[in-house]
Amino acid sequence: ENVLTQSPGTLSLAPGDRATLSCRASQSVSDNFLAWYQHKPGQAPRLLIYGASGRAAGIPDRFSGSGSGTDFTLTISRLEPEDFAVYFCQQSGGSPPHTFGQGTKLEIK
Amino acid sequence: EVQLVQSGAEVKKPGESLKISCKGSGYTFTNYWIDWVRQMPGKGLEWMGAIYPGDSDIWYSPSFQGQVTISADNSISTAFLQWSSLKASDTARYYCARRGLAAAGDYWGQGTLVTVSS
Image 1 (cartoon, rainbow over the protein chains, first blue to last red):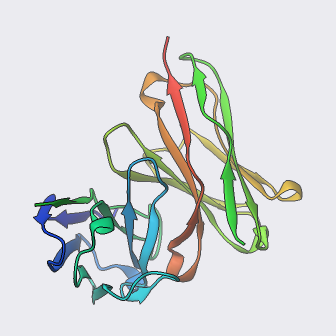
Image 2: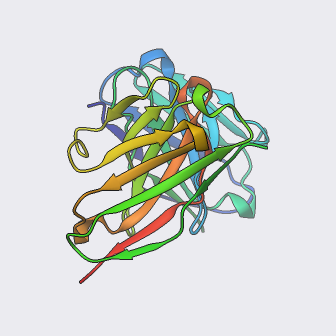
């Protein structure tokens, strides 16, 4: 099983700040099939990034993904109030299970 | 418009059976994998398994193999997740998601809250 470890567990920033979230895999992610989701209470997860760096439809360009192999990053260039949420990474390359990271909570400082 | 609409909240007793559903619309149901994802109270997301309705190929996470059954009925564009004997530890919200580009979940259902309590 490919274990994903996200860091930090909690990130405290202010609106306008830059956020950098990390996702590290225990094995190389096949085809760089690494996705990032935003999850708010009472809502379904929202796809932000697919294939490590592809921005999903309707996602603002302040969200960007990078990385390959085992190390991936989600960057939010300038935080808006609605960006404070929990962020999960998921790998879906190769054989299952298609594991999720444990999440990073982005909170207002 | 692509939509996944899940069945409503359930309250069950330990040992009871349950089948929840996820109806797809706005796209060709048989052309996309459907993933099932669990979120236990206060916890993160866990990938449970998936089905490709086109040929009924089914994958399970080892953590859920033998604990749940995934199926689909293409005539009604609906995927299912079922339990034969629920436990209190099955209390969670369950999401279905369509797997799109790069196998990422591009559309999600609203989630079904399952509560198992005596």
